[in-house]
Amino acid sequence: MKRAKKRDFRRIPVRFNYWFDGKALKVTLRPGAKINLHACRRTDEGYRTDNVTLSLENRTIIEQYCFTQRDCDGIYRDAGERHCHVNDRAKQRVAGSLGEKRDRRSYPKFNTTKAEIYDQFAEMAGY
Image 1 (cartoon, rainbow, N blue to C red):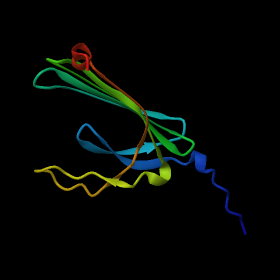
Image 2 (image 1 turned 45 degrees about the vertical axis):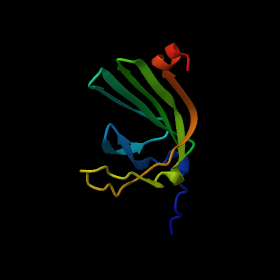
Image 3 (image 1 turned 90 degrees about the horizontal axis):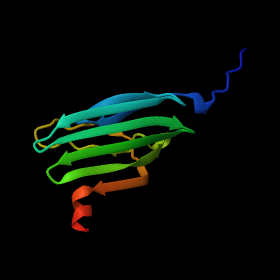
């Protein structure tokens, strides 16, 4: 009779749903690998870019994000890092807005560890 091999949980890939650019994505993360997501679009007054990097380290999903927007008020940037343990990856639901179908999928519940916001207009106005 063969003995079952012990599985090293640090090497097992993690699958989860991720909400990006108005769409749900199915993501498979392997330890040590990174996934980069990028979206850029015009707005009525300028543009907006979304950059996200997802990685898996020590059974923790790490999300590094940077959302930049430029309009008539100048540049606005929201950047930071959020973490989610793999056991918490199906803890949150996203409610669909009017006109959309209700989304029944679960998404990771990230905890913010670093955050930085820059608002050019607020800086010039002395806020």
